[in-house]
Amino acid sequence: MADHSFPQSGDPDDAANFAEHLGRSNITDYVEYGLELQNIDYGALTFDVSEGKAYLLGDTATAASTGETRHRVDHVVHLDARAGLALTDGAVNHVFVDGNIGTNDSPTIVVNTTGAAPSDSSLKIGEIDTSADTATELNRAPEGTFEVATINGTLTIPRYATKSDIPTDMPEGSIAYDEAEDMLYIEDGT
Image (cartoon, rainbow, N blue to C red; front, side, top):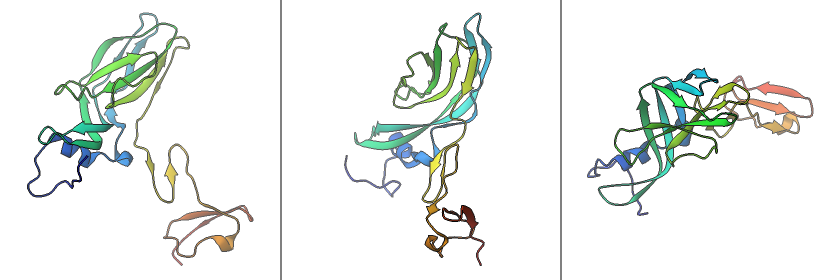
């Protein structure tokens, strides 16, 4: 890949450039709204997906204007509601939004029993287990990793052996754990 910066004066308004510009792992790969698994019929083996919007993080895209490869690209997709989607009996059915990026404006819902993503620009939005008659929606909020806290269903707090090991220059609102005293400390700015 050639070095490049975007946006800059004279850059082509290429979809791959914009996709790379937006491709940030802390703000993509999640359902913005909707795309709910609905009307699951475990007898007839069908379900519906509500209208909704998702952000999909892909590995690469090729800029049509230059032929160059762009990395970590984001695609926003909107899907109208889908009805009567088929399920496989006695299996975990993995439900994906596939951006179908190679074809303009044609995102799809893909259901499979392998769990394999249908494409580079796809997002798993749920699982329907037809042997246990259960459904789980997935990727409903963005996940992120930050310098001090990792929020991904749990909160990771920096641990220090003693209170004296806790940095004195932590920003206000920071939390630290003192293992020796088994105490949490919150920096209040004083």
